Length: 213
Image 1 (cartoon, one colour):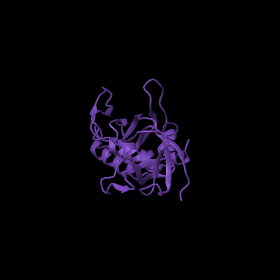
Image 2 (spheres, one colour):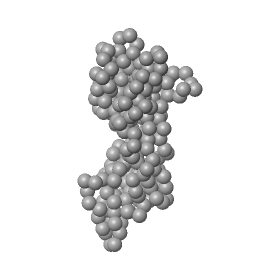
Image 3 (cartoon, rainbow, N blue to C red):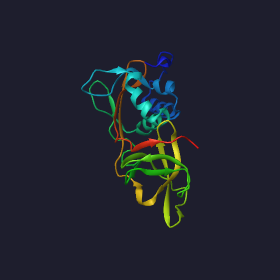
Image 4 (tube, rainbow, N blue to C red):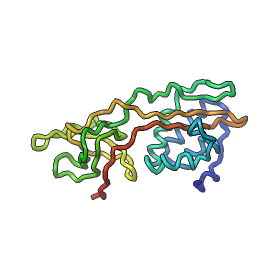
Protein backbone atom coordinates (compact mmCIF):
# COMPACT_ATOMS: atom_id res chain seq x y z
CA UNK A 1 0.00 0.00 0.00
CA UNK A 2 1.03 3.59 -0.59
CA UNK A 3 0.72 5.80 2.53
CA UNK A 4 -0.58 8.79 0.55
CA UNK A 5 -3.76 6.88 -0.38
CA UNK A 6 -5.15 7.41 3.10
CA UNK A 7 -4.59 11.16 2.91
CA UNK A 8 -6.25 11.73 -0.46
CA UNK A 9 -9.44 13.72 0.16
CA UNK A 10 -12.46 12.74 -1.97
CA UNK A 11 -14.20 15.38 -4.08
CA UNK A 12 -17.94 16.03 -4.17
CA UNK A 13 -18.40 15.06 -7.81
CA UNK A 14 -22.05 14.25 -8.34
CA UNK A 15 -22.21 15.36 -11.97
CA UNK A 16 -20.67 12.76 -14.29
CA UNK A 17 -19.37 15.26 -16.87
CA UNK A 18 -17.69 17.22 -14.09
CA UNK A 19 -16.19 13.98 -12.83
CA UNK A 20 -14.72 13.11 -16.25
CA UNK A 21 -13.18 16.59 -16.43
CA UNK A 22 -11.80 16.07 -12.93
CA UNK A 23 -10.24 12.73 -13.93
CA UNK A 24 -8.50 14.27 -16.95
CA UNK A 25 -7.11 17.16 -14.93
CA UNK A 26 -5.95 15.06 -11.99
CA UNK A 27 -4.56 12.18 -14.04
CA UNK A 28 -2.61 14.48 -16.37
CA UNK A 29 -0.85 15.94 -13.34
CA UNK A 30 1.14 12.72 -12.96
CA UNK A 31 0.78 13.13 -9.19
CA UNK A 32 -0.03 9.73 -7.58
CA UNK A 33 -2.13 11.25 -4.80
CA UNK A 34 -4.25 13.23 -7.27
CA UNK A 35 -4.63 10.17 -9.50
CA UNK A 36 -5.70 8.10 -6.48
CA UNK A 37 -8.46 10.61 -5.73
CA UNK A 38 -10.14 9.68 -9.03
CA UNK A 39 -10.56 6.07 -7.90
CA UNK A 40 -12.61 4.18 -5.35
CA UNK A 41 -10.80 2.49 -2.47
CA UNK A 42 -11.21 -0.92 -4.13
CA UNK A 43 -10.74 -1.41 -7.88
CA UNK A 44 -11.44 -4.27 -10.27
CA UNK A 45 -8.46 -4.96 -12.54
CA UNK A 46 -9.53 -8.45 -13.58
CA UNK A 47 -13.15 -9.52 -13.87
CA UNK A 48 -12.15 -12.98 -12.63
CA UNK A 49 -10.69 -11.59 -9.40
CA UNK A 50 -11.99 -9.71 -6.37
CA UNK A 51 -11.49 -5.92 -6.18
CA UNK A 52 -8.14 -4.79 -4.81
CA UNK A 53 -6.83 -1.61 -3.15
CA UNK A 54 -5.68 1.17 -5.49
CA UNK A 55 -2.03 0.78 -4.49
CA UNK A 56 -1.99 -2.94 -5.19
CA UNK A 57 -3.57 -2.50 -8.63
CA UNK A 58 -1.37 0.38 -9.74
CA UNK A 59 1.97 -0.58 -8.21
CA UNK A 60 3.19 -2.70 -11.13
CA UNK A 61 2.18 -0.25 -13.87
CA UNK A 62 3.54 2.70 -11.87
CA UNK A 63 6.93 1.03 -11.59
CA UNK A 64 6.88 -0.08 -15.21
CA UNK A 65 5.70 3.11 -16.90
CA UNK A 66 6.04 5.82 -14.27
CA UNK A 67 3.20 7.89 -12.81
CA UNK A 68 3.40 10.52 -15.54
CA UNK A 69 2.76 8.01 -18.35
CA UNK A 70 0.18 6.15 -16.24
CA UNK A 71 -1.72 9.39 -15.64
CA UNK A 72 -1.60 10.33 -19.33
CA UNK A 73 -3.07 6.97 -20.29
CA UNK A 74 -5.91 7.31 -17.77
CA UNK A 75 -6.66 10.86 -18.93
CA UNK A 76 -6.58 9.83 -22.60
CA UNK A 77 -9.06 7.02 -22.10
CA UNK A 78 -11.41 8.92 -19.78
CA UNK A 79 -13.90 9.41 -22.59
CA UNK A 80 -16.77 7.68 -24.37
CA UNK A 81 -18.41 6.32 -21.23
CA UNK A 82 -21.71 4.49 -21.69
CA UNK A 83 -24.04 2.84 -19.20
CA UNK A 84 -23.41 -0.91 -19.45
CA UNK A 85 -24.89 -2.39 -16.26
CA UNK A 86 -28.22 -2.11 -14.50
CA UNK A 87 -26.37 -1.01 -11.35
CA UNK A 88 -25.30 2.20 -13.08
CA UNK A 89 -21.74 1.24 -13.98
CA UNK A 90 -20.30 3.40 -16.75
CA UNK A 91 -17.58 1.97 -19.02
CA UNK A 92 -15.42 3.70 -21.65
CA UNK A 93 -16.37 1.53 -24.61
CA UNK A 94 -15.56 4.25 -27.13
CA UNK A 95 -12.40 5.88 -25.78
CA UNK A 96 -11.17 8.87 -27.72
CA UNK A 97 -7.69 7.36 -27.89
CA UNK A 98 -8.88 4.24 -29.69
CA UNK A 99 -7.38 4.08 -33.14
CA UNK A 100 -4.43 6.30 -32.27
CA UNK A 101 -1.18 4.40 -32.22
CA UNK A 102 1.19 5.51 -29.50
CA UNK A 103 3.85 2.87 -30.04
CA UNK A 104 7.03 2.56 -32.03
CA UNK A 105 7.77 -0.71 -33.81
CA UNK A 106 11.45 -1.61 -33.29
CA UNK A 107 12.66 -3.60 -36.31
CA UNK A 108 15.68 -5.47 -35.03
CA UNK A 109 17.66 -6.46 -31.95
CA UNK A 110 20.16 -4.31 -30.07
CA UNK A 111 18.96 -1.22 -31.91
CA UNK A 112 20.62 1.91 -30.55
CA UNK A 113 18.39 4.72 -29.34
CA UNK A 114 20.66 7.77 -29.48
CA UNK A 115 20.31 11.22 -27.98
CA UNK A 116 21.77 12.82 -31.12
CA UNK A 117 21.61 11.66 -34.75
CA UNK A 118 24.64 9.75 -36.05
CA UNK A 119 26.97 7.05 -34.82
CA UNK A 120 28.64 9.55 -32.51
CA UNK A 121 25.41 10.30 -30.67
CA UNK A 122 25.31 9.19 -27.04
CA UNK A 123 23.32 5.99 -26.51
CA UNK A 124 20.23 6.24 -24.30
CA UNK A 125 19.17 2.58 -24.46
CA UNK A 126 19.51 -0.61 -26.49
CA UNK A 127 16.23 -1.87 -27.92
CA UNK A 128 15.18 -5.33 -29.01
CA UNK A 129 12.56 -6.18 -31.62
CA UNK A 130 9.09 -5.30 -30.35
CA UNK A 131 6.95 -2.28 -29.55
CA UNK A 132 7.87 0.71 -27.43
CA UNK A 133 5.58 3.48 -26.13
CA UNK A 134 6.26 6.56 -28.21
CA UNK A 135 5.87 8.21 -31.59
CA UNK A 136 7.83 9.60 -34.52
CA UNK A 137 8.46 13.27 -33.76
CA UNK A 138 7.05 15.31 -36.64
CA UNK A 139 8.31 18.54 -35.10
CA UNK A 140 11.91 17.63 -36.01
CA UNK A 141 13.58 16.81 -39.32
CA UNK A 142 14.99 13.43 -40.33
CA UNK A 143 18.78 13.81 -40.20
CA UNK A 144 21.27 12.16 -42.58
CA UNK A 145 24.73 11.30 -41.26
CA UNK A 146 27.27 9.46 -43.46
CA UNK A 147 24.53 8.24 -45.77
CA UNK A 148 22.34 6.93 -42.93
CA UNK A 149 18.97 8.52 -42.19
CA UNK A 150 18.06 8.98 -38.53
CA UNK A 151 14.39 9.22 -37.53
CA UNK A 152 13.52 11.63 -34.69
CA UNK A 153 11.35 9.94 -32.06
CA UNK A 154 9.91 10.54 -28.61
CA UNK A 155 9.94 7.34 -26.55
CA UNK A 156 8.92 6.54 -22.99
CA UNK A 157 11.80 4.93 -21.11
CA UNK A 158 11.26 3.51 -17.60
CA UNK A 159 12.90 5.63 -14.90
CA UNK A 160 13.50 8.39 -17.46
CA UNK A 161 10.03 9.18 -18.74
CA UNK A 162 9.62 10.67 -22.21
CA UNK A 163 12.95 11.06 -23.99
CA UNK A 164 13.70 12.66 -27.36
CA UNK A 165 16.27 10.95 -29.53
CA UNK A 166 17.02 9.29 -32.85
CA UNK A 167 16.82 5.76 -34.25
CA UNK A 168 18.14 4.61 -37.62
CA UNK A 169 15.36 4.89 -40.20
CA UNK A 170 15.56 1.19 -41.15
CA UNK A 171 14.95 0.09 -37.57
CA UNK A 172 11.83 2.01 -36.53
CA UNK A 173 8.34 2.81 -37.75
CA UNK A 174 5.07 3.87 -36.17
CA UNK A 175 3.45 0.70 -34.86
CA UNK A 176 -0.07 -0.34 -35.81
CA UNK A 177 -0.71 -1.88 -32.40
CA UNK A 178 -2.66 0.16 -29.86
CA UNK A 179 -2.61 0.14 -26.13
CA UNK A 180 -5.92 -0.01 -24.35
CA UNK A 181 -7.10 1.05 -20.91
CA UNK A 182 -10.62 0.06 -19.93
CA UNK A 183 -12.08 2.24 -17.20
CA UNK A 184 -15.36 1.86 -15.35
CA UNK A 185 -17.02 4.27 -12.93
CA UNK A 186 -19.82 4.07 -10.36
CA UNK A 187 -21.74 6.53 -8.23
CA UNK A 188 -21.60 5.65 -4.52
CA UNK A 189 -24.36 8.00 -3.43
CA UNK A 190 -22.01 10.93 -2.81
CA UNK A 191 -19.65 11.06 -5.80
CA UNK A 192 -18.52 9.31 -8.95
CA UNK A 193 -15.30 7.31 -8.76
CA UNK A 194 -13.36 5.02 -11.07
CA UNK A 195 -13.96 1.44 -9.92
CA UNK A 196 -12.34 -0.51 -12.75
CA UNK A 197 -8.94 -0.36 -14.42
CA UNK A 198 -7.93 -3.00 -16.96
CA UNK A 199 -4.85 -2.56 -19.13
CA UNK A 200 -3.86 -4.39 -22.29
CA UNK A 201 -0.43 -3.33 -23.48
CA UNK A 202 2.33 -5.04 -25.38
CA UNK A 203 5.64 -5.74 -23.71
CA UNK A 204 8.26 -3.03 -23.87
CA UNK A 205 11.18 -3.41 -26.23
CA UNK A 206 13.77 -2.19 -23.74
CA UNK A 207 16.87 -4.37 -23.76
CA UNK A 208 19.34 -2.43 -21.69
CA UNK A 209 19.69 0.94 -19.98
CA UNK A 210 22.71 3.16 -20.16
CA UNK A 211 23.45 5.97 -17.70
CA UNK A 212 22.70 9.51 -18.74
CA UNK A 213 25.79 11.25 -20.16
